Amino acid sequence: MVEVFSAKKEDVQMEEEEDIVEGQVGVRCAYCAKVSSDERPDGYAYFPQSLSAIYQNVSDLQRRHFLKCSEMPDDARKKFQSLRGFAAKAESETKKYWIDSAREVGITDFEEKGGIKFFRDPSTPSAADLIEKERGKIKKNAVADQTSLVRPTDVSTDYSYLIMKQMRPCRFKNSDRRVGPGSRGRDRALGFPGIACKYCSSKDGAGRFFPVASKSLADNTANAISSHLANCNRCPESVKSSLAYLSHRASLQNAELEGGWKKTFFKQIWDRLHVERSWTNGKSKDNDTGGTENDESSAEEDDADASDAEEVDEMVKAAAQWLTKRDAQHENSVVSSNHNRVRTSRGRGLPSRKRRDSNDDVAN
Image (cartoon, rainbow, N blue to C red; front, side, top):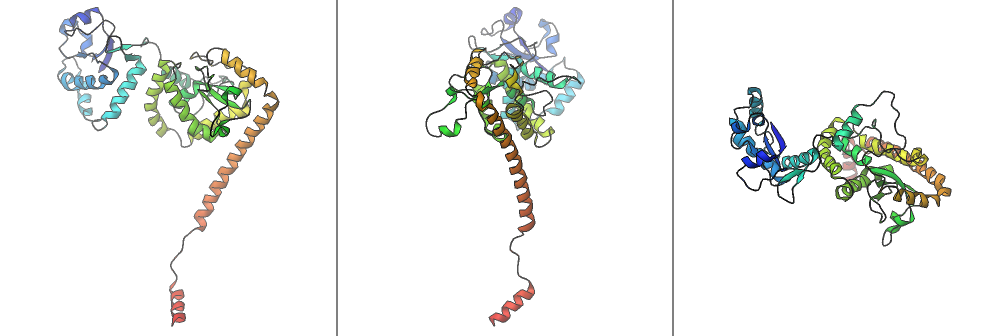
């Protein structure tokens, strides 16, 4: 019912407002857009002044135009009337959804002239579209890229999958060391496997993460990666927009997926990074979003530092396998302990009648 469009010369001439410029993006009734310009009624289109104003302008179309639109088909009108007021109590969340959806289409604020504009060709697929296509059409005998941290067959939300697609394997090096309180807890042995943002030079350690177990990868590290990508100056706006959009879809996919998918997903990544270690046999083929950590310079730096740690490489791998087994044993012991606790800890019950009577006799 609503579509976005880029203002052309004739649109600028027809608008009474003088601040509308060619290339500015507006929202309009999709039915009235099909008729000739001289037959279009007033109020069929709006030009939002910012991304946050899109929600209000679409609401104006709903209240002022759709109810009397002569071009709207009867079936569409009935459906529209049946859905009125459906999201009346979720205004703040709805407003954010409109902003993130607009960014996913390729719209951004027009800072130079005011209003909004396209920052990419909206007819080209977004990062979210590419992920959906990649995971939706898996060939039966397709061979997965063994050097990639994530694979199309992995069970996860599209949001988590796209986040981890922006990361590449790396190794702990001297420049990753920290100083100050608590630095020992964050340091690792040279050559310890980790993950790094594909877009950052990471010479200052930003965008590089070295979780010590799959659980910390799934919890703290995943949140830190999400925060980093949202603020990374080198991460493309198209990727940031798709991540913001997919965050809404994630809540629905979360309910559809089986419980425990997150733990399994990040456990697989941990195993590929520390146990399988296929990424150490060659360079990753994953270059669809243009990232090898500022071309090859940082990768060469990783290799140079990693060469000093080749002697302990097998020890690190063995330690990772030991951690994996220990975590599994710990989980089994916790489950067993909880099961026994449920069976044995029945609490303190009230004394029986016979016992009460015997106590009364002693007292007398």
